[in-house]
Length: 206
Image (cartoon, rainbow, N blue to C red):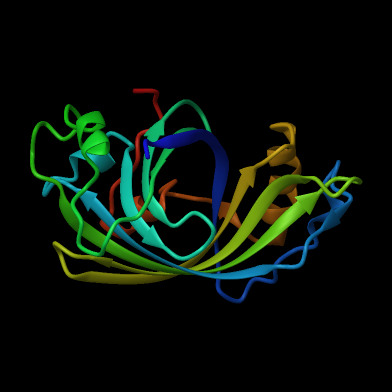
């Protein structure tokens, strides 16, 4: 089976562990908020020893758990947007899919790709629904445990993530007002992997 993909439009926020998650029904256009889905996500991230992919704003991971387990490749595609490609899981320990390796070959400068970080995310995911029950966006409350493998550095943090579904991009601003008022701040890294590695992800289109 070949890769499938979609454009991921999202924003991330840093938040303290003690911060209370806000009532998002107050966001304009949101009729109701679905019950939270509790998910455990475990991911291994691949890059070169110099983090060439991360410096280009590219994420390559193998993740289990949740509704989209598999290989994920994320490529910059504009402000708040990344192109996300998926490949199905193979047996544990399988190499990076050939197609993904070809797509990142230039950014990796031909260097070998190997695991550089592991992340475990305990997620509470809320669907923001319109009056007909259609998901406009998904908001995630994530508790993250990360380990940078090359430097043996462990970190833990909490973050909120908003990803559009069928809603307009203006919904991102409406939800942002509520999250910021609750005590969140825009993410300083823009990526879980970037935070784990201490790398600032590029926002520009490749």
